[in-house]
Length: 360
Ligand SMILES: Cc1ncc(COP(=O)(O)O)c(C=O)c1O
Image (cartoon, rainbow, N blue to C red; front, side, top):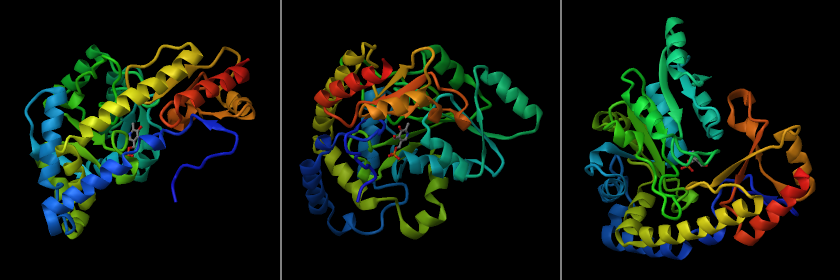
């Protein structure tokens, strides 16, 4: 029925999944009823190619509210989640054998999405300019750079302002910014400006998702792009044939947003995930990240992330070892990713106790 599989006796910090009690089952039911009442049969037929206007208008206004700038619904294309957005962009922006540059570490499940487009993945490296120069000297075409600059998976960290400025000032590189965690920001922290907004959309395409802020099962996300690229995406064969993606879910999301349910839900999520983050970070005596779902914990000298996993599972706790987040697993044995999204604070405290036993 579902992707997550609970393993008896294991407190699993490996899954970046929401805590089941925080999924808005009742509120989503209300929004579905509201969408059918307001939009009638139009909620159930083939949808507008770029996504239904009630959703793109609400989302454009929301993005402008949280990050400044003018709302522009024509710069949005609704997708079946961030993963679908990335797959789509790879399919339209890259030719087979192009290079796509990736961060190290980065969101591990993006590797396969990109590889499915038959591109070659390369690490951007510490010196991006040199990487680009070397590739171009070999006549390699770089389709884009993929990165998660805000409350990143797996590190929880955000790219500092000078690195953001340097990226958006590059005229010669398309950047795909995965902005999945922007709204999951805790305490008084403020998410840094998106590369998309800083660049005025010039060389940056942003992908976003309702998977973390509402529910993964919606399969609903978006692409912020120029109206020209939105037009190109809207003209793809499967959209022409089948209409906008996940139309009924998209109009329900519009109702969920317009009614204020999204704002109320997000307030509750932020409090709950903050408490979960604090429970895990406090029990492990590490600095809590200002946003996102993850702690990126250093492994003590002399141990490896992979070796620690075996010991940890014997003590009844699990996580994702660092190498998963590096291209071809070249690196990361000195780190593990712990997700605090799935379990309530009490279980996170117990998970940390077990992890400490494995560490010792
Ligand atoms: C950085 C990042 N991008 C994309 C996704 C997947 O998003 P979606 O469920 O909308 O496809 C995740 C989920 O773990 C993620 O962490």
